[in-house]
Length: 82
Image (cartoon, rainbow, N blue to C red; front, side, top):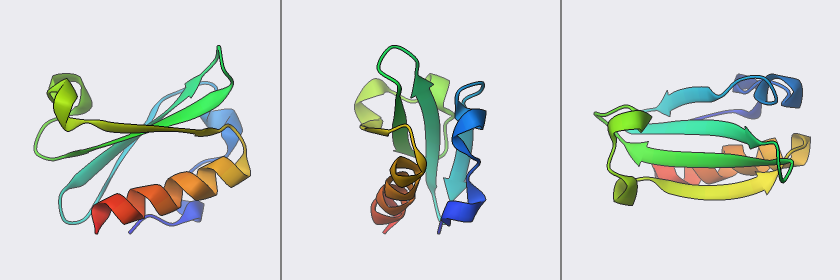
């Protein structure tokens, strides 16, 4: 389970992409879209990293690039992990 406090503040995502995982087997990625000023979250099942996971196995969703968006990302990742 991912908690909001496990994620960084918005400033981090404007400089770097964040990768994480939840138990038992879900991985996730959070990246800032500079053009739209949004955050894109992606989830996929292990065992592969993002770069080699087949595109059809990755689910993505776009969120606002603010604290509310990060809270929504947390909820979405946890929903996908169940």
